[in-house]
Length: 257
Ligand code: MG
Image 1 (tube, helix red, strand yellow):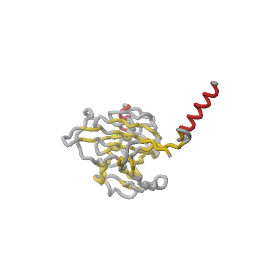
Image 2 (tube, protein in one colour):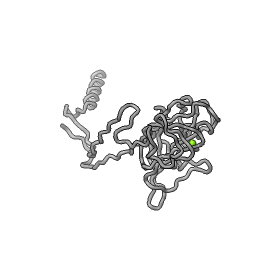
Image 3 (spheres, protein in one colour):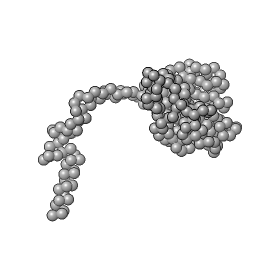
Image 4 (cartoon, protein in one colour):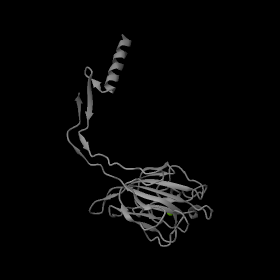
């Protein structure tokens, strides 16, 4: 008797899982939301940019950047020189890919070793630093959201080796009075390793005062910092995050087939 009951329950579970109920009739849940078709994107060759990316540096010139007169392009990469630079194209919510290498020859220590930074919207820094066997304050080491949150792990390669960041950025929102309505969020993969997981920013990332939000336009440039060190960069591209259109065409329901 007990066995038969268990078998019946199992049978009902299997039928339900397979979408059958009520005497073997198939059922399907319909959300009632009609989605626009996701766009087709060619992901490109390995190490290449996807077809919908804005390429900010492909190894040949710095025409997409402002302030880069003293940055040097050679051998497919650009070396930081005096002056921070900002991209001419501006972005809101986006995905950023950037490759960089710290100096092969070690000079300085702490914050003085191959310091640079990737700035979202020109204001929010993901630290670039040679943190390979080089201790500094943790919320200022490589991969930190500067002065706010250390990387979850230290995935640094050795000095001189090429490394990558893949950054997922959700921009902050402000209302028409300049009040913050939604903070910024960031996720970062460093050499493919998750080091920031949907971290909520407390504001911008200065050295000399607490973070704070000040209203700014919906889109801003990508910035790269010059901190006195010849950090190299290559293969920089950005994808604006698409918004999928949708509309409700009916209430959620289960239909029998
Ligand atoms: Mg920096």
